[in-house]
Length: 193
Ligand code: GLV
Ligand code: MN
Image 1 (cartoon, rainbow, N blue to C red):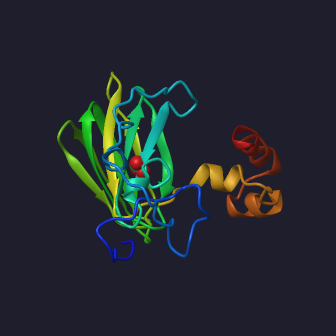
Image 2 (spheres, rainbow, N blue to C red):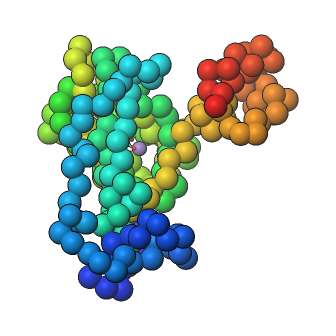
C-alpha cells in the first residue's frame, strides 16, 4: 500500500537521510542492486521463541525503494512461535516452504481465523491485524512472506508491551492485564533490552 513510483526505479541511497517517504535515489545503479541473496537461510532459531526472521526490505535490499513490496524468510524450530505481531503499513501474504505451521490472525472483533498449513499452501493477513505462526510439526518449518510495502514495520506485542524503552508503568500493565505487580515484573524481565 505504499505510494506509486514516479520512475522505473529509485534504488535507495541508504547513506543519505531518509526523505519524505523513503530514501533518495542512488545515482550509480548496477544489476546487483536488483538482486538479493539473503532469503535462503538457514536461520538460528535457538532463542526462547524458537523462531527467526530475515527481512528483505528496503533496509537490506535497497532496490525495493519506492516499489511498495518486500519479503521475509521465517524459520521456526519444532514448537517455535513467531510472536503475535502486526504490520502497520502492509497486508502480508505468505506460503509455507517446508514443515507444518498453524497460522492465525485476529479481527478487530477478536475473532481468530486460523489453519494448519503445509508446503505449498498460502495465507493472507489483512493490513494491521494481529497474527502469529506456530510450528506444529516435528521438524523445522520455513515460510516466505511478502508485503505490499517496502518497509511494513512490525509491532511485536509482547516486546512492545513488556520490553519498551522507557517502560510502560506497572500500574498501567497490572490494570490492563488484570494481574499483579509480580507477574508484570516477571514478564518485563523476559523482554528487557
Ligand atoms: C510473518 O508474519 C512475517 O511477518 O514475516
Ligand atoms: Mn507478519
